Structures are given as structure tokens and as C-alpha cells.
Amino acid sequence: MNHHRPVVLLGALVAASISGALIAVQVRINGQLGAELDDGFLAALISFGVGTITLTLALAAWGPGRRGFGRVLGALRERRMSPWFLAAGAAGATMVLSQGLTGAVIGVALFTVAVVGGQALGSLLLDRRGVGTMASRPFTAPRVAGAVLAVVAVVWAVSERIRTDIPWWMLALPFLAGLVTAWQQVANGQVRERAGSVLTATLLSFTGGTIVLLIAAGVHVALAGPPAPLPTSPVLYLGGLLGVAFVAASAALIRVTGALLFGLASVAGQLLMAVALDLAVPATDAAVPVSTIGGAALALVAVGVASLRRRTVSAAPDPVSPVPAAPDPVSPTP
Image (spheres, helix red, strand yellow):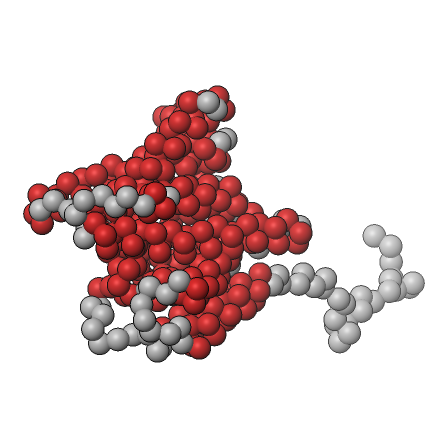
């Protein structure tokens, strides 16, 4: 159960929604970059590389962030933190790679709602399990209902957008990305707690993802040949900065919201921004269906339902329980 004050939780959920909206913009940018390069692997590498370079420069000017590395190493040596948490960047690489491979083809809205199912289910299971120092959060009725509503929102939103000319893997890949993103958010939160710095946790995540994508992009170029020339529009190189904001938000907020609420709030933000982008700057000629807009609205309802707390009811005396008998005045005193 979340023990933070309602105003703190509400602020965290609003911040998570804003970070999710940034990811929807990142999907559009990385998808377009992948289309112009004709290489989704290289697009993902560029996105992560820009973020890693930016964070490295920031770390050079931020002493607490540099000291955070020492605290992380100490936690690893003393086995107070699992080394698997440092693999969060590889999970993030899966998300960015799926954006570059599928985002421009299936559209921002369809990509985003395909992520919802995986992220909602993954977050619910991680909260129930409890990871690292995060306490286990039980399967309460509101939390389960919120996750189910999120899945229903996915089904509703994509119901009119699934076309026979879309390969099944272009929907399966975002779903898988949603699953691993749920774990990435929890892992980043654990690293941030040990490092005492959001900047340290974010840079470690981006560094791991950059290494994974550098290998993947190198193999892809060796097999498929060189990509198209780099596009000249500077906007297409901003995806990494948006990713930095999202990873930093997850590292800072996950202890307040838990995996499920952060995931649902960020997903709601993604859906709303995705619909806005598809309406304002459509990636395809097809109109945005009413079902997609309805799915985005239902995702907001899912956040509200999952945020409901169980009331702690004080145990009242049972009116039918026998009342203890008064001492018998004629009974012998021990």
C-alpha cells in the first residue's frame, strides 16, 4: 500500500504523465529518424548516444553525481544491490529500438497502446513481487481493476487500427518493450537509491543501453549494409534528450508511486500526447479513430482507479459476541 500523502502522490502522478507525454514525442522522432536512415538500429543508437553524451557532460559539472558512482560500487561489493539493476539500460534499448523499427510504420498512437498491455501487466507483477528495497504491494481490487482497465484501453484503442498489412511482430515488439520498461523503471529507482543521485542512475542506464545498441547496430550494418545519409534536421536528434527526462523521472518517482501507478500514469500521458500528435501532425493519411481517443481516455480512468486506497476499518465490537461475565461475588477469591 502507498503510504505517501495524497498531495505528494498526485504530484508524482502528474510528473509521471508529463514524462510519458515526452516519450510519445520521442516515438515520433525516433520513428522518423529510423525511416530516413532506413535503419532502426542506427536510429536507436543515435538516440541513446545523444543522451549518454549529454549526461556525461552534465556529470562533469555535478560532484554529487560523480560521488554516486562510488556509492553504487560500494553497494555492489557489499552485495546490498543486485548487479542486474545495472542492466536497466538494455531494457531501455529495447524500447528505443522498437520505436525506430516500428514507430514510423504503425503510427505513434498504435505503438503507444501496444506498449500499454506489457507495461501494465509487468508493473503489476513487479509491485506484487517487491524488488530490492521496494516493499511488496498486494493485488488489491483497485490495483487489479486499474491494470485490467489499461488492457481494455489497449484493446479498444487498437481495434480499428490493426491492418492486415502490419506484420505481427510490429505489434509484439512494442508489447515486449512495455514489459521490459516496467522492470527498467524499478531497476533505475533502485540504482538511484543506492547512488543518492538521479543523474548517476540515469547515466548508468543510458551507458548500458548505448553499449547494447552499438553492438546491435554494428551487426545490422555488417549484414544489411550501410544506412542512408544522416538527415540534416536537428529535431531528429532530440529523441535522446526526451529519453533522459523519462528515465530520470522514473528513477526519482518510482519510490513514491510504485511500478504500477508510475507505469499507468506515464502510459496515460503517452496515449494523450500520441493522439494529439496523430491529430496535429499525422504520420499516415488515415484519420485517428474514435476508438483510439476513447482508449486514451480510459487509460486516465485506469490511473484513477488504481490510485484508490483501501480503507483501514477499525474493528468494531461484535454485537453478537458474548460479553465477558462479571466476577461472581460469591466465588472464592484465589
